[in-house]
Length: 310
Image 1 (cartoon, rainbow, N blue to C red):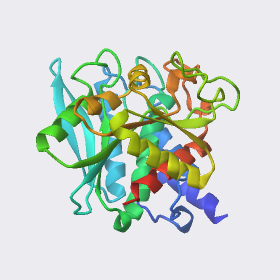
Image 2: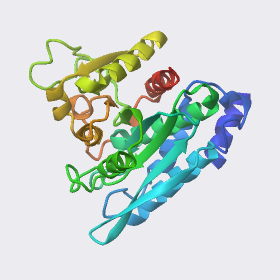
Image 3: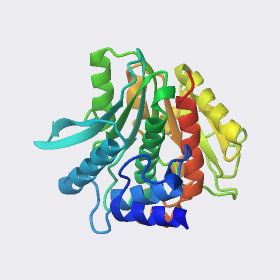
Image 4: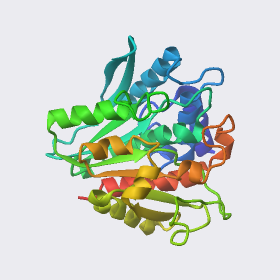
């Protein structure tokens, strides 16, 4: 009964802090939190695409406020494209360490889409990761910077106007010591049937079912992908598959993952593989009812466990 009361409070007033009530002080990801985040990220009547600056600003302001409720200060990284101002949300969990881990997800969508999997799932996952790491800040051995990007979708995709490119460029300019970069992009769609497809040559190596999370990296990020799948294996709740292949990474370049790789950062993409599995990807049917929030919590718990390692 107490748990139900907490869920109602969360939906009515939002997460006001990491210890709103006993039921939500768990060190594991919670479906009820994800439900709240999705309800705020996705508007019924508005689409968060590059043409709708008002909606992008609403979402980015809400993200900033929610992160600050977790005790994580944020600032907008503002930049101008075609005489319009767009903004990333950059938040810092500071432990006074000498190294930093970066975690990112984009909040904009392609065209007039709900974008539940692409990429409200990544944003919701990053928010819950931030909440859990803030609860366990004393265990962190490095700072964590959370970045929520705009302009990752067409027509700005593969251009230097992408929010992830702007952020990666700023990190390089600051000459910060980065332990690694983790991008969450489409992490909510799973299917136990043989629906999984791959770029040419990989279908004989990896599972045909779509009931796993993928950790994709280039050769320099072998340690990251290994650490994440090791963390997932400890929970033994959801299968994790590592892809360390330059060619596959190029085929999965829908994400801002490659912008960090361009600046020689060890970078990992955590994903359900998007259009290689999800038939609703970038369509009007990419809605919340298609996602498995319980399995999303497993993805998040694995990331938190990995981040807390030395």
